[in-house]
Length: 120
Image (tube, rainbow, N blue to C red; front, side, top):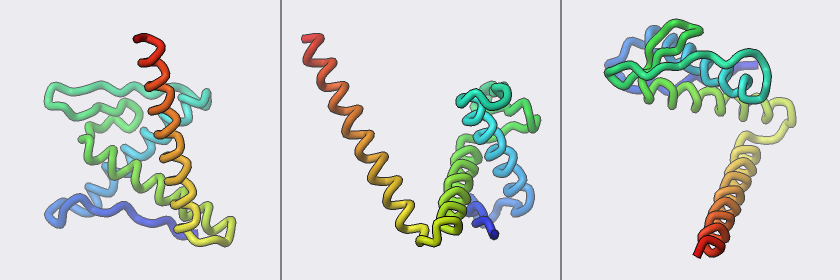
């Protein structure tokens, strides 16, 4: 099964170096998410004085853009894998996820409104 590649940040960036940074950030995002679900240990992440994040497991400093690109790549790979297994187009799954997220957003907004009303 082929996995979609991460989009490059800018044409001037070094391709393989940028890809490696995004892969490391993606691994950190994935391992952190797994740890949140009680799988494995929680990796250490520190904020450096220049605003970058230090990911202790791959021992690399990354920017917010690196983490964002890595997260996009992880979601794209997941959507692609689900489409391959289900035999349905990626679009069907992406739209279903969006509807679910939008519904959750509405529910959180309603819960916040109820809390505000209760507090008043």
